[in-house]
Length: 109
Image (tube, rainbow, N blue to C red; front, top):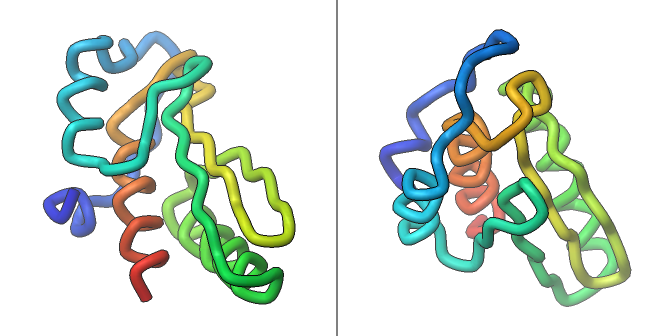
C-alpha cells in the first residue's frame, strides 16, 4: 500500500470500467484488514475511546476532502467503519485503494 500513498485520486467518468474481482483481490492482499464486502472495500478501525474515534473521523474527512473521494463512515464509541466505492463507475476503482492506503497511514499516527 505504500506505493499508493504518493498517488492522487482522479475523476472517473461514467462508463469507466471498475476493477475486476481479480484486481481487487490482488490489491486486498496488500491491504491488511480490508475486505471486499457489498460492492465496496471496507475496514473497521478500533480505538481506545470516543475522542480517538472522532479524531480519526475528522482526519478521514480531511483526507477525503483533499482527494475529493468520500467514504461511507459509521461511527460508534470506539470504532469507525469505512466503506469505499466509486459511485460514478458503479464499482471499485484504484481511487478507493489510494484512499484506503492514506487512511492506514492516518491510523498509524
